[in-house]
Image (tube, rainbow, N blue to C red; front, side):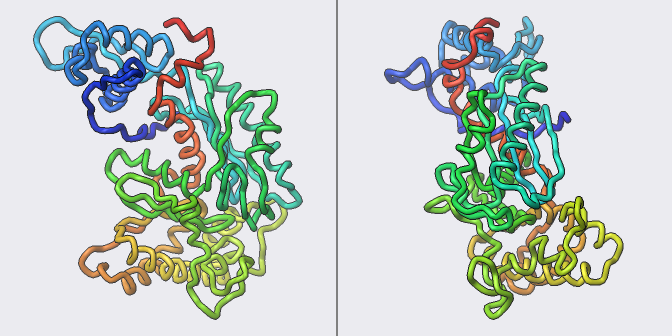
Length: 414
């Protein structure tokens, strides 16, 4: 898999700083301009846009080349007369990020290089029946080691890993993931133990947030504000405003599945009634006919829908209506004009969209003169695992000096 997604958005051009850590800050300044260029950029151009001297640019470029953060990309005239120049661009070798995801239909692992290219993407179907948290994370650790080994052969070094989980997270602990039977599970510690002896920093985040970041990175600067709705084991939302993920005061925003759509409706495991979760989750759509043994909920729901199964079609109609009601409240509050259906919803969008759109058009105050875009997510069910991998390398792109300080000895020469 070699699909390319856009790297994180660089900051605006800055003047060179004059502080004690001048060396590090100027290195990061130069690297941000290389990242932002989107094409090979010469040392002369870098000196011009940063205001740094040519010898300083040369020293920084050599350090970035030695760390395999950038590479020389042949000759470039840059549209000007005279001697052609050697361009500098992001390296496809060197540091990489690993993403891991617990999806409704199985487990996924993904490695993304510094350019934003997906270099490895693997998926293992799973129904989780009878699986404990250590079982799930041990399987993910096995997939992580396989991904690391596969990309090491391509001269990539996985620096960090990010795990996407279907529930709120605090300090690596999954506080609640009812569909997995998890409560206060220290996923960070369990995964670190399972992946031993690899010394790999691990972070854990909500899958809807990571999927929203994946879609943001993949949007090629065309999408700055949107709601990403993830359907699957649960229903979550990632909210992006002006290019920034909105996490809330404690990082728990986006629990769309527990927005009340019918106050006296179905009882929810959370203790409330009428939650969206009880009408639009995969378990609600499958109803009294759960997925057969060995079949994932995703496959069962889409298979029955494609076959025109009456109960499934009726459940999808009800799910679309409930989803539209919940989204309308969110859109009225946030003034966002785009909704992306992700996770399992990206596979079921054909059956959900009409009813959801009808409710949005009826309930969103501004919909009559500012229509809402409702469409499947660009990255489909892979959005969270790709977003997790991109998150893992985002810190390298923001702070390249951190990578240079800890790079393996065998990578210290160009």
